[in-house]
Image (cartoon, rainbow, N blue to C red; front, side, top):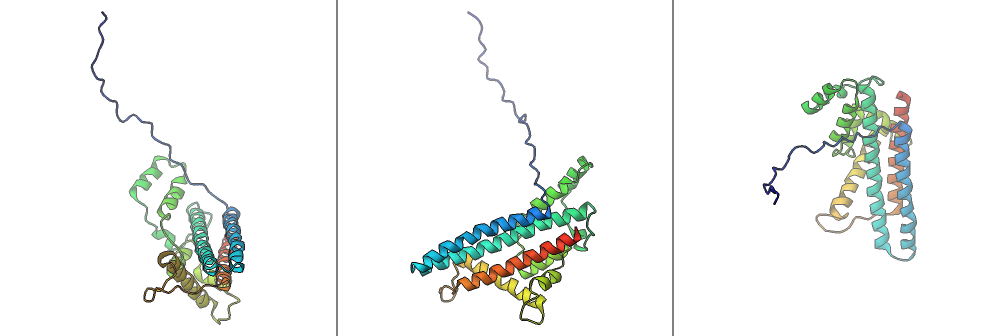
Amino acid sequence: MANIKLDLSERVEGVRAPKTPVLPLHFELKEIKQHFDESMEGIQKQEDTARMLLESGQIEACQDIWRSEFVFLESILDFFLHEISKYALYQMFTGNWEKSEKYFMIKVPMRDVENAYSDLSSKEWFFAFLNQSMSREVYLSADSMREQLNKIGIPFNDVMGRAFSKSSSTDPVQAGKEEVKEMFDRRNKIAHQNDRDHASAARTEITNEIVQTYKKHIIGIVDAVYHLAANKS
């Protein structure tokens, strides 16, 4: 009878082929703006649903659609600011845009620095670093939006001055800052408190006119940022 080896073979470890990292995609300015416009089209479709609910007397359900519409509006503004930020900072890094003072204050972990030195022929590591480092940041408050826009070389005051140039206020920059703050506060109240007051638990009134005003402000900010970025490019 043939000898049969019954010994257990030692498990081979550490031989799994490493996964090739998936690099984030680069988009041109027109594509970034197109992403915003496509998202806006999807949000606008909710207006038909809200209108039908209102006409059928389902007021509370209609108002919830308006609330969700506004939260989505703020979310696509934030995503636009993320995309434009990666684009702008990469343009600075590659020498296509003048570098802002705040650009030089970007802190890069040593892991990313070592990755950069492992392949000096490519600058993709920096774009991947930007994508990862900014993924959890939110640029919707007046302070964070100002900080980020100034960092990417598209001054906050220029954006507000252009976006709110038709404001009834004599100072469009201050008017824009106040509107950005109001929108961010309302967004947080809807997203984290169901739009209820902490003291009374009463829900804050919302109307289609309020949502349309917010939408106008957001489109104005995006158009201003896009116009200023296009002029730099």
